[in-house]
Length: 204
Ligand code: URA
Ligand code: SF4
Image (cartoon, rainbow, N blue to C red; front, side, top):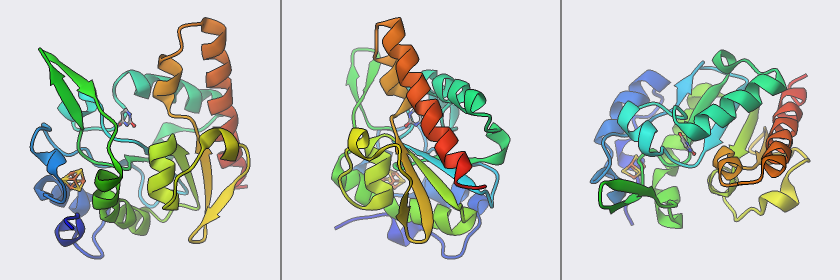
């Protein structure tokens, strides 16, 4: 089965990985996307955040979390007292998966095959960034990092462990955007902030 393995240079730092990922043909997602969106931030870093995949804005900009979900994340990091420039931010899948409807590109969840195909890039980032704590933003990230299906509601709130790193799972910031009721939104952001604080505390 295809996968990113043969496009990932071994022992590379994040700058070299970021260059190499543009040539990846490890699954079908490169065909329709504008570009690959690699991780961004400090390397090495003590904290790494993993999202799902780039969205429409990220696909165009070439940077993770620059769209609406990124604004929610920035607010939550701020409230948790975590400086954006001290962390490394990436996604489980590096190309945008979408369905074209007229002029709009509608986000589609990456499937298990995309997650598995793209995992060598995430592993290379783990090696290069060497974080002590990993925050998984949503179920796709948790599945990619922990290698199993994860129910966020059942497993958030307690630090987990994987390959010698602390892993904290939380909701995806775009889940906040789907809520219409402002008190529900407030509660969802508060939960995200609490999980980010838990991750930061594990570093102390
Ligand atoms: N959602 C993600 O999971 N990652 C991004 O980079 C943007 C939106
Ligand atoms: Fe390669 Fe990942 Fe893009 Fe698929 S999504 S082509 S595995 S970088």
